[in-house]
Image (cartoon, rainbow, N blue to C red; front, side):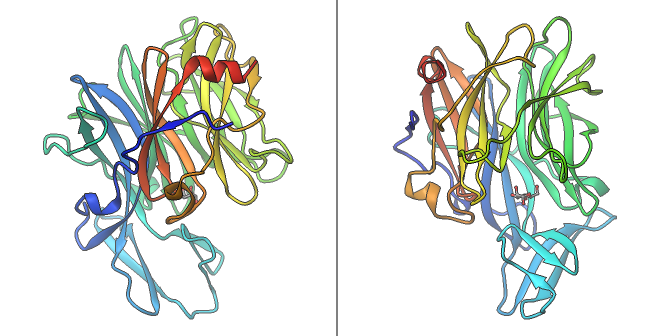
Length: 347
Ligand code: MAN
């Protein structure tokens, strides 16, 4: 059952609403924002994906050269070695590249409808060898020690999870890769449990195992261990191919509530919920049998990569969780859900 109340103003942001951030590129997609509240405003850390204007017969895409400069690579579209069957990926001679380069861009709003940029808060670009294909899908955890940003670092050698900490979004500490490849979808809990940091993460295991949600503990938020698997994919269900955490879990009276994404073999991305023990979040108390939100709106069904709703950011207002999400890997939307209603679906 879809219990989301979508904003009537959706999509809130489209690629044409912003100017490209990399010289010579155009914005292809806006995706999967991290969310935080600062100075009474809602802020989104958007994933902006750019590439050069495409010319007939070629596919071109940006990467960072070792010097840090942007370099454009291109292939002839009729090259028999080229596989463009997935609009997100270029497969060529056994190697994968991304069709776009992503970075993070901050926008804010007073009404959660109209968003704008502030020149004092510049974009966050990938840096160094492990981010040479960009950074993606940022979660922002608001903790008593400041903001913890976790995001996907993409490069020819790996897809892993990077961490940046900041107190004000003006100066940043880059902590490097905290979960090595292949790993994504990392959400750090916003409070410690029995003195330890906790995080969800999503390693992928190609042989035994799969794309499952794991939990890890840390003494300092940077070094992680005690890994445990908390949710696997379920054959024949909406989350049969991959699952991954959304934003940091929400503390409720019944347990930690985590809104996660699940996809099936057709790459249809829906949202569901997990309820975990407050004192020991490795114990799963309940899990959605059916999605609580599915791609039903037109902008969720058709776009750069259709039939996708993907959330990794929200904030709370009483019983309401306001989710921000990427629809069809192209536009940014929001929807509200009642926490009590989610908990009722889990009973
Ligand atoms: C998948 C998708 C893309 C993403 C790459 C690299 O192909 O999630 O959106 O760019 O992985 O993370």
